[in-house]
Length: 119
Length: 158
Length: 97
Image (cartoon, rainbow over all chains, first blue to last red; front, side, top):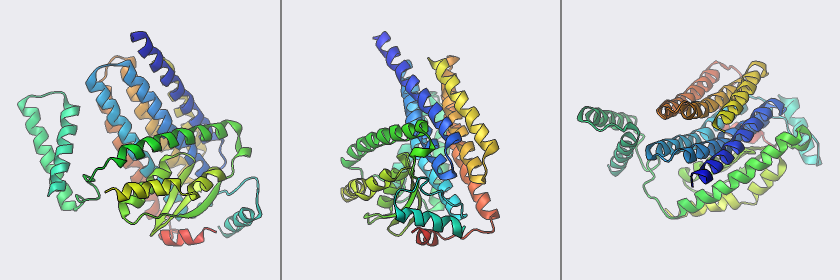
């Protein structure tokens, strides 16, 4: 039983670490602010969930598990509010979104032209 | 009044779960802080049916499970595009309609959009939500209205 | 495994700091700082387990709340100081094609 729990915990922690690293790479690699916001979203949601679940499986003490669940719930409630406030502030202050790098259809191509020339 | 009582009960549970010490002094301090918090919330006039959703229903867990599934799928997509590089992403901004009638319903919808990586709600006016998406398919799946109808169903179950 | 996860989070935090230093716009920096903060919450919880002191979880919880408030505060400040600010979400929605 102990072995299974620690194995599961290691599995969750491994996935969480990988997602965290991916988010870090994404925030460096993506071309503009709005796309980077999605990369940060990955580390806020699934990576945090995976790491906290991994920690929950490490320790069977009830109080610790409750506190970890509270941290998880706080993260999940706070992160969309923060990223919405950030995105809205950026959009209100006319930070132009980079639209459609590889123009697929005419409509979005003209839209992106509009957008960048105006701002 | 019942919203204030529910807020007090939630704060009491929060204190008891986090404290771990149960002697008289600590409990008295806890009761005092809860009273002060409820008083401040009353003066700020933020305790109402919107902050205290005590009209819970059975739809909540079902929606939560569906949202978790969506979050996992969306995360995997975004991680895939992070490692595939910038050439594979097609960032899009679009305004989509929200069919919810109450403010709480619209906020739940916008928050669900933001919580799934790949889509971020940038603005919410009346019944229009401005969404930025990492790839175009995300916008198309939002426009198909699956999440919208699920939130509406949640709203109607109150 | 807990130590490996701690190291992975440290690396992610370093990447976020690079973005905060490099970021062309103010919002890139705020985003990077926000991500740094959420990673700090995870780091503190993990460190509590590494050192065998679960009391660290209380600190992590408080840090999560402080981080949220600081991000909202910086955004308010940037709104107040930005002169180009339109201030109308309704206009914003109209500008989208």
